[in-house]
Image (cartoon, rainbow, N blue to C red):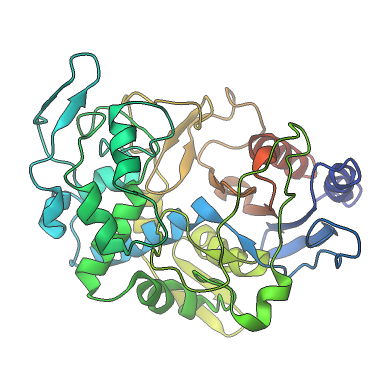
Length: 381
């Protein structure tokens, strides 16, 4: 890393704080076995007198939960306890007999095949997040899909009978699929998702500040967003209340974490299933399994929406870069990444032996930051 170029990353984030676009942020860059940058800028929360942002601040990481849950599913696959080729209904009977709704005709019909666990992992299960208006979206809202007051089991019991938006395997649409995967993990393990993640990943990796709620002694270290979006002047999206354990332990977006904690997970991923540390190696998965997870699983399947940049496919829980060109920010073919709705993002670049994490609580700035941050990191190579 160029010692003159690397500080530009911090300077750029500080400018955004000074311009009132970010309350504060934490950035971490790890290159060739060393953390070359781990710095905080701005304040922990908006308002005069707020404490300065700390490098160990806690953030809601939303969809950066997905890669962790996806890895756990593949760990169960390695043990022969979960087969990706089996229908979701094999593990969750509520998903038997699903039908596909045709908005144009107002009819629903059985699909050519059922959605599989593989479809859940790559978002081709015909599910949705119900962000767009429509009959299926209305059904999601009526069933309170996504309510933090419903348990994982209650969520899938309500979601399973609802119509699909696409035949399974026919299109990539970002969706509640990983939440359903969390319920599959609970069915296989016979335990709550929080217990599964703790036993399988968080505990072994020493991710002490990662979970579905912030313990009382760390609540003062929780980063908060602006109440009003600084660019639109409208009320900002309300972020999850993480002061107490929720009923809904969302595999798709429920965790809180710190930069140092998430760096341990990414170091494991960069190590292809093994975290090499001062106390010896910690192996959670085969290198072949991690390579499988971070390969493109879409091929020619159409991608709906604009969440995946050009030159990107999707693996199992992560976006995968298929070409060095085509995208709007630098990156190597074979790198993988994802982000979180609250304003967090990461990428891992095996070719450069590199990963980087940006944590902030600025939902309205997410897309901009996901383009800005990689450009600043790669500029320092």
